[in-house]
Image (spheres, rainbow, N blue to C red):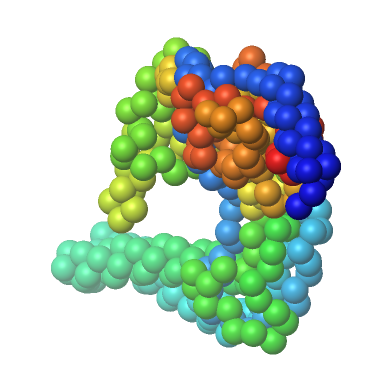
Length: 341
């Protein structure tokens, strides 16, 4: 290498070092910030029902589809009720037969009472006819109750909407066999929605303490951020998952649909967090990095894992930096200075 080239190299290194020294930096510090616990949640309708069959029968008609708006009492599914109709008719015929027998028994009883007054029959005959009348009356009442049950059972062949709402999904098709307890359709009432999260035992006490101080919960929902003041922590835990359900009522202004994903942020007290100014963070695609100033005054790129934005506008650093290190406030210029070394 000639003396001239060596001189230019030394001048370039000196210029890069001077440029690096001129760049403003910020020190990574720990700052008190409100702690939080983030939990995944699912949006639910406050009023949602799974309508199921109460009787067995083949589906003759599926009158609604997912997304349909229905009124209370509107027919959702029509089942084949011929067997149920035959049972109802049989019950009604049995009532008529019992009523005819009762009428005849009542006439016989009156005749026996008249004959007993004339001493043509004994009192035991009157007593027997009276017992028969009472038994037939009881049978008529029992048959009427059975006919009522048969009528009610037949009415279950028409499955109707329990309230005004929207059909979220149907679980059966025309021609299928409906069975008691088998879901037919899922309905929900739009307007009143909530986000449901399940908290682990390890976070429950901290979340409850945070809610006691500040009942508001922040929700990230479909690109929007909403704040709810109505939060309900259920008093019991799920024994299989060891989690407790928390219901967060959504404000009327929130735009959401049942089943949508949400992220709930619960305040859990104050914590010390590593943080840097937002200007120091360099983002290139999937890369999140900063330029850290070394002991020799040079900048070196370092990848970090960033957390949430804090109230003072700084960014939380979850990994990649430690307190006391200095980062460039202009990462682009720091990158140019680092490349010129």
